[in-house]
Amino acid sequence: MSRRARLVLFGLGAVGLAVLWVVATGGLPPVGTDVHPYRDAAVAAAAAHATANVVASINFDQRAVDTLGEETILLASVVAVTTLLRPADDERVEPPDPPPAVLPATRVAGWALLPVTLLVGADVVLHGHLTPGGGFQGGVVLATALHLLYLAGSFPALQWVRPTRWAPLVEPAGSGLFVVTGLVGLAAGAGFAANILPTGVLGAPLSSGTVLVLNVVAGIGVGASIVTLLGQFLRQEVVIGPEAAS
Amino acid sequence: MTLTAVAWTVAGWLVVVGALGIVRSRNLVQTVVALSVAQSGTYVLLIAAGFQRGATVPILGAGGAGSTPVVDPLVQALVLTDIVVSATVTALLLALTVQIAKRHGTVDPDELRALRG
Image (cartoon, rainbow over all chains, first blue to last red; front, side, top):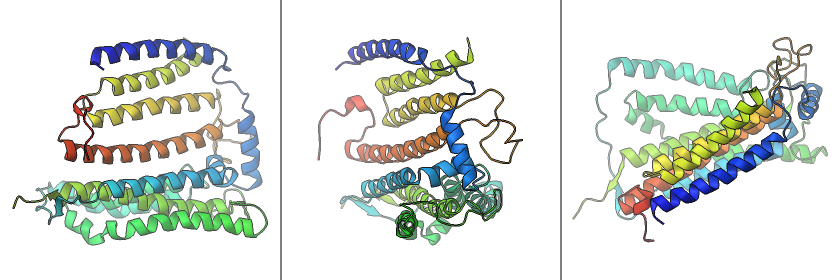
């Protein structure tokens, strides 16, 4: 199909969608009203389990099974990317080129921010049930910390940590522990991923029962999967090259 | 325009503009980014649906919660799921793009005509 024909077809589709969109959204209640039945139910359920962050309560308590599905999508994506980016038959793994010169300021900033970022990531994970954050957000921050080494021009240091060796094992371990936590609830007779731990006092660091546990488990899984994903892309760029013509 | 009209229009506009980006794309990386733009329309739609005037964050015990109503946390949880799935899909598509660039020597979708092993 020519580009022109494709654009004309798209234009027809877009006009049709626009008409349907106006009709559909015209029937929706206006934005900003105080009618939110799901909000009322979710807030009451979160308060009953002493989880200050209602969003975390929804993700890791009220619909924890869906979050397990989300975690599984992440795992599937990591497996797929790892499969796609492995060296092909006509490629070889070569030692990385010496890293390009990096400004001393960049290098210092990278190394200085490494512990800070690790700390922020752990904080976001561990307080996910109290304040905005949680396992998914904190896991991404933790994974970012590791790759500050790359930005600081220290690809050898990043290789020394060998993220592509352990991260693909830690990722399924995180997802597996999520399932185990769910099965413990099942074994206790409360149902899969039910909040069976004592929930404590609202706002206390050790409150919310399994939400805290699942946040940590998800943080480990997400952190490891982002490390794996970025590691595969970096490896592809830095150490995998076409086989030398022989 | 009222807030309602702005919110629904922006959400729909993002989806259409993202789709247009995919259709017009001459580079697969751009195609993947355009898909992300289209997906972000759903974030706007969901967050707008959960908004309430004068309401505070859905964190119990913060910002005078208890006396002040909070915005709908359910849609925020859905957006979080949405973002995670969007990120994984983006990673997968970019990995496919890397392979296509290596196998076919081009990332222009229009030049990818023949199937090759």
